[in-house]
Length: 102
Image 1 (cartoon, helix red, strand yellow):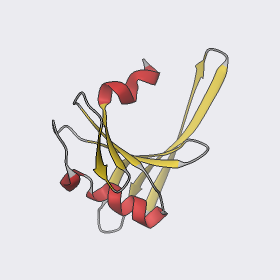
Image 2 (cartoon, one colour):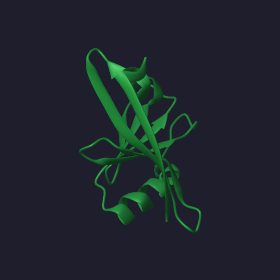
Image 3 (cartoon, helix red, strand yellow):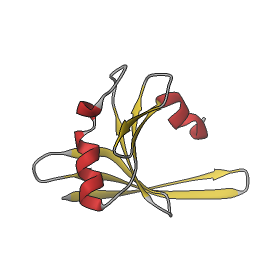
Image 4 (cartoon, helix red, strand yellow):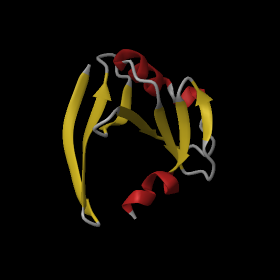
């Protein structure tokens, strides 16, 4: 398993928010686009362009969650509605996921 480390910091109205961003990948090639350390949890995030992703789009998330003992993850997509794929995976519209950065 390989986790590459990246730092991201930004200033928001007198509050400094720092999160560590990682890339997660197994030796067999399963991967997650982002593994975010929020300071209180690790959150795996996968980005897909499919208009209605299903569980077949979440195999990397499931493996990451299992390997790291995580309870939830996000699958970000270009749709308009959030919905559960089960097993702690929530689809999140890209506009909603990116709104704190706008």
